[in-house]
Image (cartoon, rainbow, N blue to C red; front, side):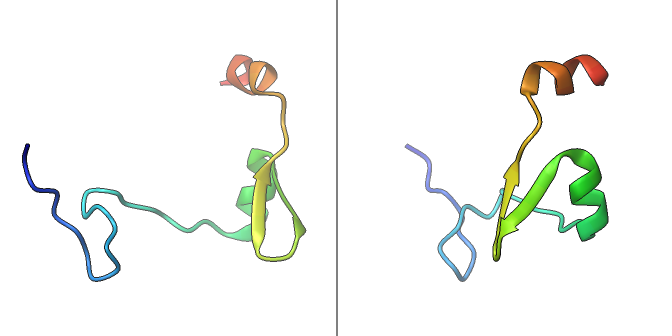
Length: 51
């Protein structure tokens, strides 16, 4: 098995994330009703159909 490259936090080095502005997140269907946590609140079926 190949060794997985990890960053200084021990996370797979190939995993990337892009932080979006709060308004963009809300427009995409996420909500932050619990401080510090984002949740996707749209019904996935409807969201996929809208793409």
